[in-house]
Amino acid sequence: MVLYFYPRDNTPGCTKEACGFRDNYGEYQEKNIIVLGVSTDNQVAHRKFISKYQLPFPLLVDEGGKVATEYGSYGLKKFMGKEFMGIFRHTFVIDAQGRIEAIYRKVKPETHSLEILQTLEKP
Image (cartoon, rainbow, N blue to C red; front, top):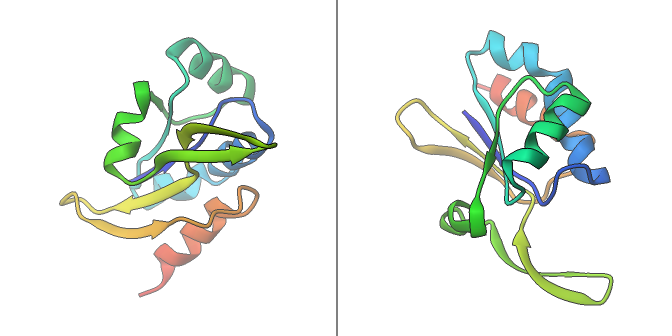
Protein backbone atom coordinates (compact mmCIF):
# COMPACT_ATOMS: atom_id res chain seq x y z
CA MET A 1 0.00 0.00 0.00
CA VAL A 2 1.06 3.56 -0.70
CA LEU A 3 -0.23 5.91 1.99
CA TYR A 4 0.48 9.49 1.05
CA PHE A 5 -0.22 12.50 3.22
CA TYR A 6 -0.77 15.82 1.48
CA PRO A 7 -1.64 19.29 2.79
CA ARG A 8 -4.75 20.34 0.85
CA ASP A 9 -7.08 19.47 -2.03
CA ASN A 10 -6.95 21.67 -5.15
CA THR A 11 -3.63 23.34 -4.38
CA PRO A 12 -0.89 23.33 -7.02
CA GLY A 13 1.55 20.86 -5.44
CA CYS A 14 -1.14 18.54 -4.12
CA THR A 15 -2.88 18.49 -7.49
CA LYS A 16 0.38 17.60 -9.28
CA GLU A 17 1.06 14.83 -6.78
CA ALA A 18 -2.46 13.37 -7.00
CA CYS A 19 -2.44 13.52 -10.81
CA GLY A 20 0.92 11.73 -10.83
CA PHE A 21 -0.60 8.87 -8.87
CA ARG A 22 -3.62 8.97 -11.21
CA ASP A 23 -1.46 8.84 -14.33
CA ASN A 24 0.53 5.88 -13.00
CA TYR A 25 -2.38 4.13 -11.31
CA GLY A 26 -2.41 1.28 -13.83
CA GLU A 27 1.14 0.34 -12.84
CA TYR A 28 0.18 0.33 -9.17
CA GLN A 29 -2.79 -1.91 -9.95
CA GLU A 30 -0.56 -4.32 -11.91
CA LYS A 31 1.58 -4.64 -8.77
CA ASN A 32 -1.52 -5.06 -6.55
CA ILE A 33 -0.64 -1.89 -4.67
CA ILE A 34 -3.42 0.18 -3.10
CA VAL A 35 -2.97 3.96 -3.21
CA LEU A 36 -4.58 6.07 -0.47
CA GLY A 37 -4.33 9.84 -0.11
CA VAL A 38 -4.85 11.49 3.28
CA SER A 39 -5.46 15.13 4.23
CA THR A 40 -7.47 17.09 6.77
CA ASP A 41 -9.91 18.29 4.10
CA ASN A 42 -13.51 17.17 4.55
CA GLN A 43 -15.36 14.57 2.49
CA VAL A 44 -17.08 17.20 0.32
CA ALA A 45 -13.73 18.71 -0.67
CA HIS A 46 -12.34 15.23 -1.37
CA ARG A 47 -15.30 14.31 -3.59
CA LYS A 48 -14.88 17.52 -5.61
CA PHE A 49 -11.12 16.95 -5.95
CA ILE A 50 -11.63 13.32 -7.03
CA SER A 51 -14.28 14.34 -9.56
CA LYS A 52 -12.38 17.33 -10.97
CA TYR A 53 -9.19 15.34 -11.60
CA GLN A 54 -10.76 11.88 -12.11
CA LEU A 55 -8.71 10.31 -9.34
CA PRO A 56 -9.17 6.50 -9.33
CA PHE A 57 -8.16 6.01 -5.69
CA PRO A 58 -9.72 7.00 -2.35
CA LEU A 59 -8.88 10.12 -0.39
CA LEU A 60 -9.30 9.79 3.35
CA VAL A 61 -10.33 12.48 5.83
CA ASP A 62 -7.93 12.87 8.75
CA GLU A 63 -9.91 15.14 11.04
CA GLY A 64 -7.55 17.13 13.23
CA GLY A 65 -4.52 15.37 11.74
CA LYS A 66 -4.76 12.45 14.19
CA VAL A 67 -3.53 9.77 11.78
CA ALA A 68 -0.86 12.05 10.32
CA THR A 69 0.38 12.74 13.84
CA GLU A 70 0.83 8.99 14.43
CA TYR A 71 3.01 8.86 11.31
CA GLY A 72 5.00 11.97 12.25
CA SER A 73 3.40 13.82 9.35
CA TYR A 74 1.58 16.60 11.19
CA GLY A 75 2.99 19.61 12.96
CA LEU A 76 3.96 23.25 12.88
CA LYS A 77 4.38 24.63 9.38
CA LYS A 78 5.51 28.00 8.08
CA PHE A 79 4.20 29.53 4.87
CA MET A 80 4.35 33.14 3.69
CA GLY A 81 5.35 34.41 7.11
CA LYS A 82 2.59 32.57 8.96
CA GLU A 83 2.81 29.61 11.31
CA PHE A 84 0.08 27.01 11.53
CA MET A 85 -0.50 23.33 12.22
CA GLY A 86 -0.87 21.11 9.18
CA ILE A 87 0.01 17.95 7.31
CA PHE A 88 3.48 17.47 5.88
CA ARG A 89 3.85 15.97 2.41
CA HIS A 90 5.08 12.49 3.36
CA THR A 91 4.53 9.04 1.86
CA PHE A 92 4.73 5.59 3.39
CA VAL A 93 4.97 2.29 1.53
CA ILE A 94 3.41 -0.40 3.72
CA ASP A 95 3.68 -4.15 3.08
CA ALA A 96 0.90 -6.74 3.36
CA GLN A 97 1.80 -7.40 7.02
CA GLY A 98 1.41 -3.72 7.90
CA ARG A 99 5.16 -3.00 8.14
CA ILE A 100 6.52 0.25 6.78
CA GLU A 101 8.93 -0.61 3.95
CA ALA A 102 9.83 2.91 2.84
CA ILE A 103 9.29 6.49 3.98
CA TYR A 104 9.50 9.52 1.71
CA ARG A 105 9.81 12.80 3.57
CA LYS A 106 11.32 14.96 0.82
CA VAL A 107 8.72 14.75 -1.90
CA LYS A 108 8.73 16.41 -5.33
CA PRO A 109 5.03 16.37 -6.26
CA GLU A 110 5.64 16.28 -10.02
CA THR A 111 7.77 13.11 -9.99
CA HIS A 112 6.88 11.43 -6.72
CA SER A 113 4.66 8.66 -8.08
CA LEU A 114 7.33 7.59 -10.58
CA GLU A 115 9.99 7.69 -7.85
CA ILE A 116 7.97 5.23 -5.77
CA LEU A 117 7.41 2.91 -8.74
CA GLN A 118 11.14 2.91 -9.51
CA THR A 119 11.94 2.07 -5.90
CA LEU A 120 9.40 -0.78 -5.90
CA GLU A 121 11.05 -2.29 -8.99
CA LYS A 122 14.42 -2.59 -7.26
CA PRO A 123 15.17 -6.04 -5.78
